[in-house]
Length: 516
Ligand code: KIV
Ligand code: ZN
Image (cartoon, rainbow, N blue to C red; front, side, top):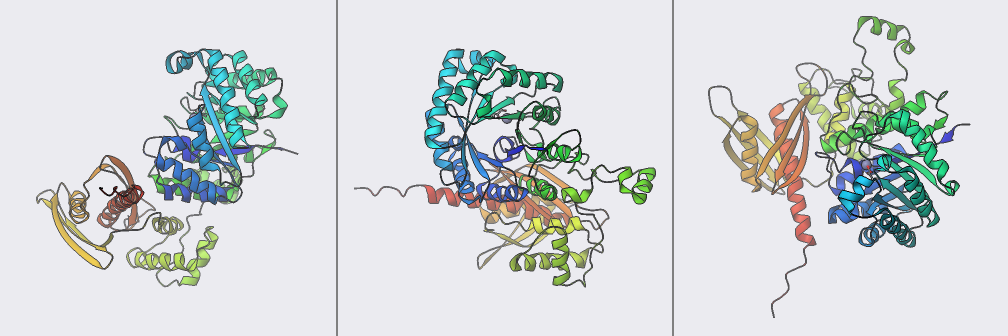
């Protein structure tokens, strides 16, 4: 009988912390719902002391998760821990995750504290957290560069104080499997009360070894693994959830451990995260990359046709990957579309089906062949995480290498329709400027990416943008067979987020005190 490994997902904390991966509250909630469908054991929802937005997101996720444990991160001090406790208090299964650095280099230069001071602070932090929450995880930041005897002493004290999960991070991705394994085994053996805690590994990918180290961690006694969808995270990222899970799943004979992850939800989780953040995975990324199950070479194709096992160690269906088959044409009805979505793992309610059908018919008018990926793009393009204050009704842009580019844009806000035109550096820039004129926001494009969803000249183009508005960055996304339409809608998507956030902040601000 294989042993269970608990999956601790930190996509919304360590992952979200990385540049270009930030999400607003609604986006985090959307992702958290998908993580619960994926059946992770723990969602680390954020770092509540970091900002009001982080606090609110953790609180909202804690209130909504039905069965998944919701963890909040806190440094080892009273203020952080109180805030974390407050944020998760409505969760069915709350956890406070408190941490402090333990390596000499961090103690000397960052904390300017002695080992005994850090030990004392750790014990106090765990005690404080235990008073607020029945489940406490304690992490020693930069553990792999810390003195092993000191770590053992610290962990023993933390367990004594009531921490039941002990995390041993490779914070800077410095470990290699052949040293991480013995290090963990020796460390755990030194902790006298080790039977009262679950040990956890948390690996970063600076040397590209995060997944390998995590698997070694599991083999060396860790029964919790910390990871992120698509491996997003600080610098080179965290260990990728899908790679760890599928390695355990595929190599059961040599790795006698299992997770409770619903593997068929992996692809959807990966796509959703990319869609929410604009952080794409590279085509050759294991498990979820575009090419992960594509066979290009003739010999491979021939083998796979005869028996998929010749070149496939797992089936695309196991991770919920659509088979990229030609599906339907413009005469297909709602019922067929609903069935197709069911096959792809999406149970659409009436409203979502109507919206998907509307976009499907529009797409079918312009595109001969519609693939599974097109349908997924339609449904994810329609993801509404915020209300669309402005809707794009019309865009026309012209450019070229001779004339100055210009665009005309028509936006609707409630019942009102606004029209503006602008010149710019190319048709996309012109359309963005015209949108700015209407919305009164001053957006600045930080990043602009176009990719095709499927093959062919009439392929759907997906546009992702990062836009800075009033010194904050927002992501936007849209898909269309027309690149100008997709660009204008992606830009407007980001601007709508800025408009929405501004409105929410105004609502949060206390009304001005009446003057006496
Ligand atoms: O990498 C790390 O050490 C962390 C801790 C906060 C657990 O993310
Ligand atoms: Zn980390």
